[in-house]
Image 1 (cartoon, rainbow, N blue to C red):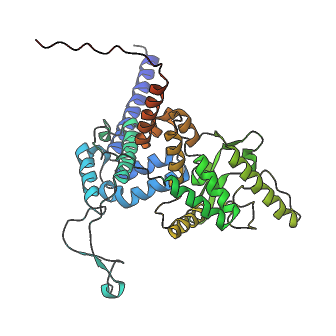
Image 2 (image 1 turned 180 degrees about the vertical axis):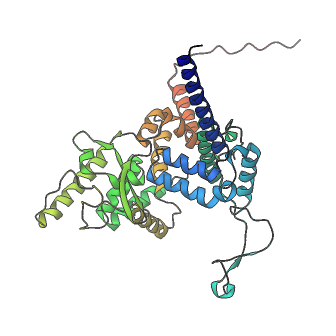
Length: 387
């Protein structure tokens, strides 16, 4: 071998040795990474909405990191995850089952003065535990992709079964009482309640609605945005499914919205202001500023107070259920209902939530089809003569 070839070979060998050492170093670092570190890296590189990020950070700080934060991800197993789920379904703080006081503050203090109470186990809900599983699966899935662990133990972990949704829409009688009371309170509020009943929009979508999204000539409303209020700060964002949808409006709703628009035009004209398309359709109270949206919390609170006054046990979101169940009971096809509600999956979500009403609609369709079948004359069966 020539001298130049030997020199080149030695140089290449040194580079290879250095690269292999770097790889070994990275593997050692990765294999020793704790779950808390892996979770922070996952949050850093994952695109999440602000509300979702806050939700995940809350679960990590309160529930997941206290259990696994210092555990190396390579040592996490499916059994460890299932044990956590079982503990959380028994007690959200994973107590040792021994009687103790829940102290209001840490350190020395007067329990009697602060009214520290005996601990009572309170299980975490099924949906919350499933959310914990989703976060664990995301973090460990990322660690698997990054070659920090040989596999994702969350894939095999058995999470609690999700309970079948049980929507409780108000009855037709109660819905009529609620609508009548809303208009008695004031026409703006009555129009808002009526609009939710007939369109089934979500609360955030209602509050984000602007006049630019309503075509009263065509009788169509476009749902493009949602309004969210968090810690006193309001922000607009995409709809829950990140998709725009168009909802047809019935004649009565169109008339009510026209009257609502005219009322606002008159109010603003008195202040020498024009009603513009970028103003919100619904605002807090009469003579409020239409450049500001109705607070979602205020809408729910006012509706709940109205329902309580009537002795009806319900909440604002139940009006969305009312809209869906009325349509299904009337025989509207599943895909149309799903489209109006903004459900994804081609109606799979709608079917899961409103299975009982879909079944009732199917029964009604069967009876309707039977009534339209041609009438035929059937020969009476010949009775066998007795031997």
